[in-house]
Amino acid sequence: MSLSFKHIISHEWERAQHLKEYRAGRVDRSELCDADFLLRAAAEYHGVDMAKRCPMCEAPMCLTTWVYGEELGRRAGSARNAEEIAEFAADGLEFTVHWVEVCTACRWNHLLRAATAYDEG
Image (cartoon, one colour):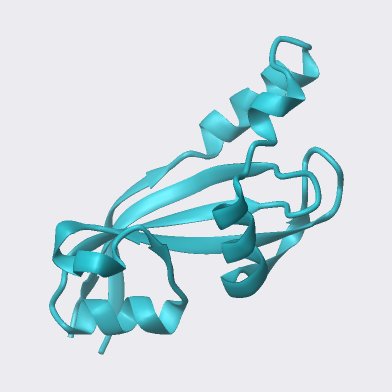
């Protein structure tokens, strides 16, 4: 079992642009700090602590991974840990993984990257 990713899309530039617009006063904080209950709960219970701090309030952030794809059936659109993602790929399923940073303190959230997961083995 060897989890790999292809078709990787980074959203880091977009993140930087959102923060630049906020700092320039062109975007309201409420537009950026809008994590809903489900996203915050997933971050709290399934998220992995990140080394970087929230760009809005300096609180610790969590990285959550979400899976999407028809082959996942009812599991699509849910937060999953690395082991579960590897198991899905080992089962031969092709699906997209989204890495989302979340601050549960101020509700900041941003999609950092997305990629298609697959098993190389």
